[in-house]
Length: 133
Image 1 (tube, rainbow, N blue to C red):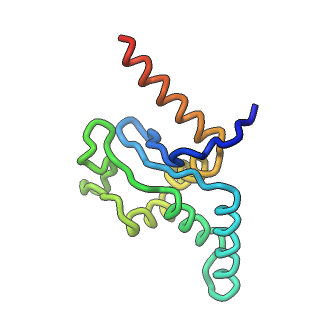
Image 2 (cartoon, rainbow, N blue to C red):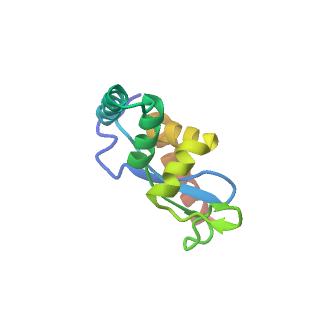
């Protein structure tokens, strides 16, 4: 059953990406998604930029608010060639353009309302389970 007012609260969640890294994802609603697509189509018409690539990058910038190691929030979690990959627009763009698994993760969790809300319920369940032990 659908619930009206689902996003009257914070629209972002820390979602586990792999065994030790989580990504803060902001849910992207239908209207914002349509605006991103219109912008990508416009940019593609007036330049040689691929609309899909442009849209994917803009979606990443709109949806990803950060990343971190799950057990050490002072560490960015992601490492490339031995160097920590801090959260910034350059690294985010690289990940969205060059790392299909990351791009798919962001797209799925930012757009799919059910997936986004299921993550919230799972976090609440884990928190309750920890509190009862």
